[in-house]
Image 1 (spheres, rainbow, N blue to C red):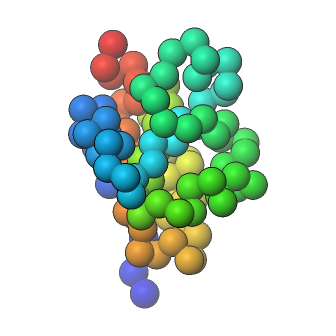
Image 2 (image 1 turned 60 degrees about the horizontal axis):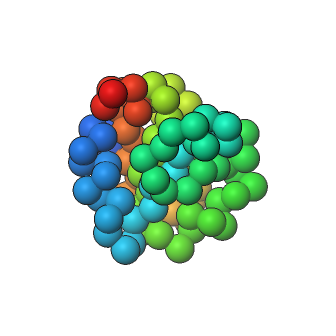
Amino acid sequence: MSKKTYSDIDLPQALALSQRPDTVLVDVRESWEFEEFNEGGINIPLAEIREKRPLVAPYQAIVVICTNGVRSKVAAMDYCRVPEWADKQIYHVRGGIIESE
């Protein structure tokens, strides 16, 4: 069985993908950061991604974003480890939100 990995994408690709009904954009920054500025999607702080998995489970594709790509990479790797999610597409926004500013 091959180890599941995520795909690196850039912010414009992420925003285009997040328009699809089967895709969710997950911002893993802290709530205050999300309130200050966000690219949409749902906010699940990195510390809560395991307990909040049911929120993203219905989607076929998950796009994970944070400020600079560090926390989102951790989250993307974690999502790749969920056995029942083997058929999902996991995307990681390379460079995060900063990249776009």
